[in-house]
Image (cartoon, rainbow, N blue to C red):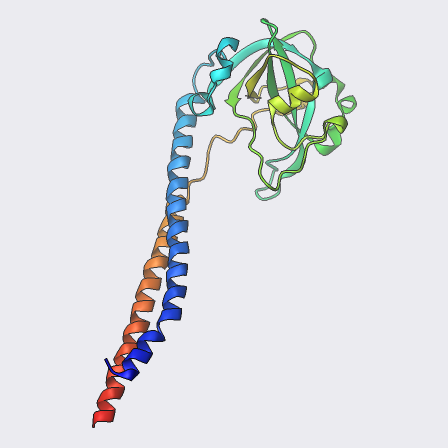
Length: 258
């Protein structure tokens, strides 16, 4: 191998390593989107299988310790009990507005429901705008006595690094976490899941239930094609770049020999 070709070959090391790093990122993103696609399709299947039809009963308290979201979430249920309005927990969130892209700020009202056995199920009764956070602004919204709620089983809301810390002392909540709310209020025998109440009207019109999105977008295949397509493009571009550089070496050597 000539010194010129050796030099040209070595000059490909740095761009080659950079291309490999970018290629690994693109393939990783494509693979992640494949995993997300499988997760989303499973979630859509769960909703289609469980969220419609006649409501069933919640799992008995004896099975709560073994409760699993992947086996029970989004199932339509009906439960009867009495609300403990004194322990109502407003969770900050957004709801769909009249115009797409213009959500309404407000709160989801999580209220303990004491069922016949004495155990408690947290119910997401629905959404109220910010100016109705205080129960005194909507006194008719807190029915007394026995009520029957129909809704969907939901897992506790997952927290991430952007979720603010709750402040139980000020009754400020940022995640729908039934166990955290129960601990702050010294409530026992609390279900590990919530029930998202359906859109049945509440007295005074608030809170508004039926906020669970049942139609989920699934664009992950497009992202898979995009990331893998960029990876293939990168391979093609780098191959052409390396070939032209090495071919240039051969051409230079021929000119020198002439």
